Image (cartoon, rainbow, N blue to C red; front, top):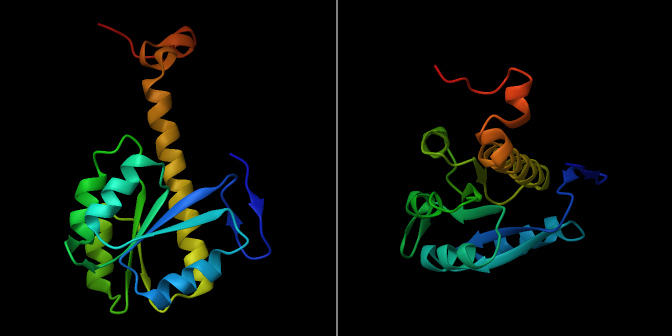
Length: 165
């Protein structure tokens, strides 16, 4: 996995989508400005249902959502994303970002909480780290499910595969 380093922060080695869910207009504009000129593509949707539909139709690396949405909350969305073959990382945006919300998001499988209005450095840090963690997790799952690894393959020859008995 190679990455180019921008003057400010590393970014994905190819175009990656951030799904912005129910962000108020000023936050969505700010996010778009922060990510302009990068390999991040911002797609905006208005609610959980649209986010689940959109993430099922095309690859999404990171979902950035408000804590509360018209048809649910961040944890409703998290539950719907878990079943995806390569679920996107979920980051919650909130004007009331506090330790309680942050702890709840992390404990239930979310990646991070970002305070709004957005800070450029924090947005870039959170998105890149969420993306890279998701990529490593997806790579690990693909490796474990690869026939040469699942059946022992080269690892068995080297004495590293699973042994029966």
